[in-house]
Length: 493
Ligand code: NAD
Image (cartoon, rainbow, N blue to C red):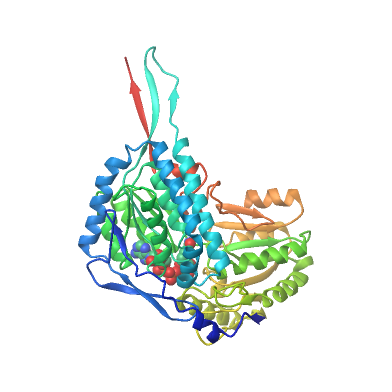
């Protein structure tokens, strides 16, 4: 285990005078809002306060709703070619500004600058992909029952969308919802996470500068439960889109049901990784380190339960633990850091409690297991082997750099353990056998499967969970359909 540099020393460089004062974006104008502030943005690497976040007043929310409604009448009639051009221009602006935006993301979220830079390149890719999707939202002509008649399916935007996004990917997750909704011809009121406002503000600014009509996108902040219930109880909102925890997703699904609003929920996961005897051990270890430490493990598809076959178990656990111990943990702005701080104290404390519980219940600490430094929310990548099923971490999403190893003998045993939980977002296997890969891909009860890879969330493919991981998908050709209604038009002459 190496630390990038003395954290206290680096903290001096991380004072951010260029962190913007977060503002809401309502009806095409930036405003602080009418109800004081709802909390502060903190730099997770230093605990330094970066800014106060505005709290939307009832008037702010009503203004956002009204402007999303009036703007919908303009935006839905804007040609797909013009909508696509605005999205593409915004993508270019994001690329131009990515060095600055990535720095802000690292300051507010804690991930490494390399990860923030990559995230903004994916934000731009997401805007580009959806620009193309706007042009591909074709309807169809059905063979007519009667001569002279036309039976058509015409794709129509659903209307204003309420979107809620978390702090772990404060660029990509808002971008997916905003870009897809706008491509479909919907308008949006989004409440991003209050802990990471600057990333979403950067996306909104790029869209404004690209020529998005006023009111087509509104960004509000506040007390999450108050904002979501106010927006979702409004008749103006015709679609709800949420990424976050299963508990909050369940609550929002009930609110959506009361208003009969269609809802897409991308919720938590607890991804199993089956490592078979025939896996390429070198590749598996390197890939598992990257998968576990990416975004400090705060990823809904993060590999968590490493279910390892008997013949390779000892070698895998030893090599994986050694490799995790070599990961350089440090401030995201330090280019030597390979993993940044956890996003907040809540998360670090939760991981700490899960680690001590897993060890109390008989788990063997193989790597990590403690904090790094005295400031910020750094935690060493941790591997615990032989963890009991009763340990909290084996059942609740750790959402941090905590890996748990257990063994299995037969493929059926491995799959049973992989499918044990009610989560169903992603699942993985490392194997060189095509037959094993096919069985795993068929039998895992998840929304996305990675064989020898953890890359299961890419804009060109549908992404979403089953069971307690939610419903509906983002991305792929399926993504835009969540924002549209296939209207049937029967025209008899
Ligand atoms: P949380 O569930 O309270 O918050 C998650 C996000 O949902 C936050 O951005 C929050 O602002 C928002 N939120 C909370 N209540 C809301 C409401 N009533 N209406 C609208 N939005 C609301 O908790 P947290 O401490 O931030 O995270 C806890 C757990 O959530 C994590 O351990 C992880 O399991 C899960 N999580 C999942 C994802 C994901 O991408 N699936 C992202 C973040 C957190």
